[in-house]
Length: 487
Image (cartoon, rainbow, N blue to C red; front, side, top):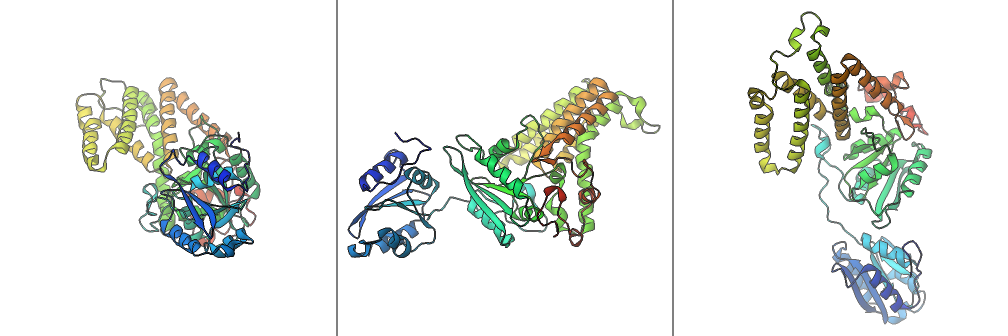
């Protein structure tokens, strides 16, 4: 018996080869795995392919071309003549390992087995069912490009290369998963990126030992980033080719996974998750204003709710003239329980919106408005202040550019709220302190997560807080250790 990781070399015996491939590919067990028995130029041949992955017109053309061959044309140097003369196609190669051929055929290319040749010809005439490169829902802009990554890795690498016509752009290919053999590409600019980081990523990807990648790029992240109990994202996802290109020029390394419309950007800091392409599609002053507004929304989503709860249960902490911030009318349910109920209700509503057809979205919105709004207040379930401040916190969460960071911040908000309810002022301060210490101790691929705040770098912090004009951004971020620090 030949095991999955062992090599099984192509034999001179034509029948032995096609029997082995037929058995391993399950030709008679799967309706979409096709074996065509052919005879051209007096030689037996066989084509192995997966229906739905093959461009029929190209294979039809190649078969017509081969059918015109005479026996004497393939008498000597048969393999070289087929590769260089008689199979006029761009993506073609030879391989002598039958197990590798099985994996390749299942990925889409077609295998041509020829009697008398101890190697198999692979013809990459494949196509995948794919949607058009539409603008991603999560990263929309008012003005800018409308194309986005799709589920086919070749399309995604082409969209990236279209924006980076640099001779040092590298797209290194590998397969991950013992059974799935998922295509993965590491993308970087060789003249800019830190090659030590590139090598570390390659080692991490090669070390992945699992059957497959059913969740695509998310499974990859969990293997290479670790920190499974930490909700904060170690990598950034993007579905925009222009965003990926901008990070490549800075010195980041990007990972593409076949079947996933999102690219993984490494390494990233906390502040990368707070930036959005919209800031760079406007004038620098407008972009800086948008960034400041976004920061205000994010900080409000984190701290406003626990802070208001602290003032509500300790009104003596309020300065004179600010007593209106507290609760005007006390409800029948404790404030903490009200907050937790609405937090859970918002998450349920978000999940319901994901699973609700677009035709019913309006009805869902009306139900939510009635459930969380006026009716809940009138029956005494909630107070007006709880609805107000939770609405502000929810808006700040949705204003967070990174979906993963928004979810992590929401979890921290609940934890900080519980700390504040338990220990009052001490709990509020201790919760924020623990949060800062946790973030300060985190590293994304050996890069401090809070850089340039901790460790402090004035130039980097200025670029984080303000959207600088592009002519002034003449240096690449030093934490990436770029080979070429000047833009």
